[in-house]
Length: 129
Image (tube, rainbow, N blue to C red; front, side):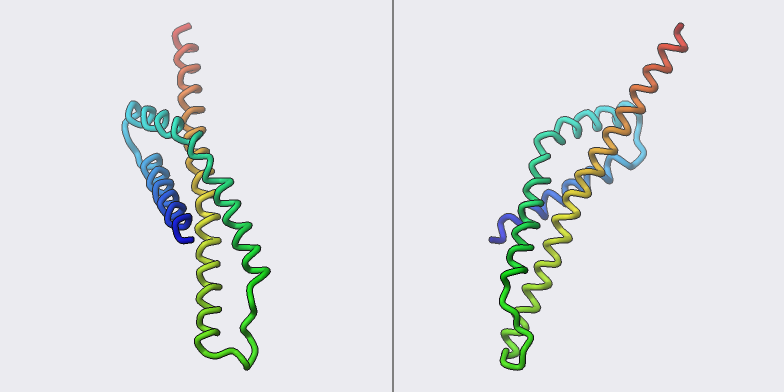
């Protein structure tokens, strides 16, 4: 069960690094090449959005059908296990939402730089005329 969370963790880490690399100042040529490379990678990486959505649904279903351990009958070990599962579920929700949010941020950053590049090309054409 932990494999999907490891995959999601690595994807979030890569998305965070890409967002950081895209936002640091660099020469225009390097920036445009990097943006075009990341744009090519974004389309196959779109799988992360439904994957994270499915994981969120799985967390919700498990939360709805989880055995409650709040009464006096529960032992300390059972109560600790219950609280640990709640914390893990909260961590995984944050991981899923950050995966979707970071994907959207990288997508918007790339789209922003492409729009800037198109506007610069239009400006060059107007200056030549």
